[in-house]
Every structure is written in C-alpha cells, then in structure tokens.
Length: 90
Image 1 (cartoon, rainbow, N blue to C red):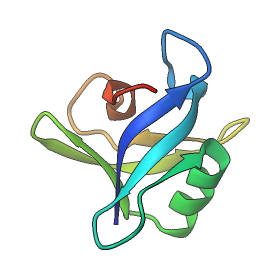
Image 2 (cartoon, rainbow, N blue to C red):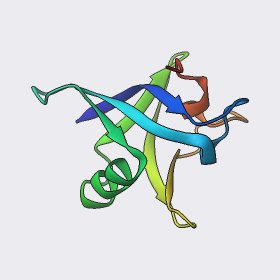
Image 3 (cartoon, helix red, strand yellow):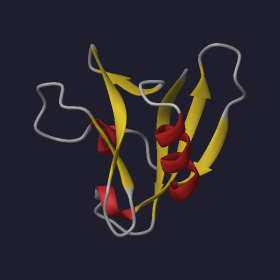
Image 4 (tube, rainbow, N blue to C red):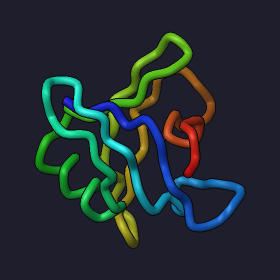
C-alpha cells in the first residue's frame, strides 16, 4: 500500500496534466520512491486500490484516467479539486 505525498510538475500553475513525478511512501514496508508519470500509471493499473492520497481528514484512492498520455487522479471524495494538486510540489 502506498500513499502519494508529493508531486513534481513541469509548469505552474499545477494541473493534473503537468504532473511529471509522484512520491510514493510505503505504508506496509515498501520502499519510499519517486515514480515517473508513466511508471506510476503502470503501477496503479497493475495494483488497483493500493495507492491513495490523504489530507484534511479524508482519504482518496488513486485511479488511472485514459488519455494521451494516461494520467492519475483521485476518486471523488466530495471535494471540488483533485487531492493530488493539494500535495507539496518539488
């Protein structure tokens, strides 16, 4: 199980399409590491419902959105913005 706790973006203001890397923090003994967008998409496709974002008292699982290229977003949790964009940016 991984929690995404930070992102890197190619331009500002950040948008889901400008995220280039995600920081995955292991929650069950997995190593912490940065994933490129394509590696993160591949991981979430292979391991659904095992990657999430937490903050503000809520937890939202991450899903893959088919696009050109594919990208990640969080499942709806009652907020108007995607939880990934609220993470620290490096």
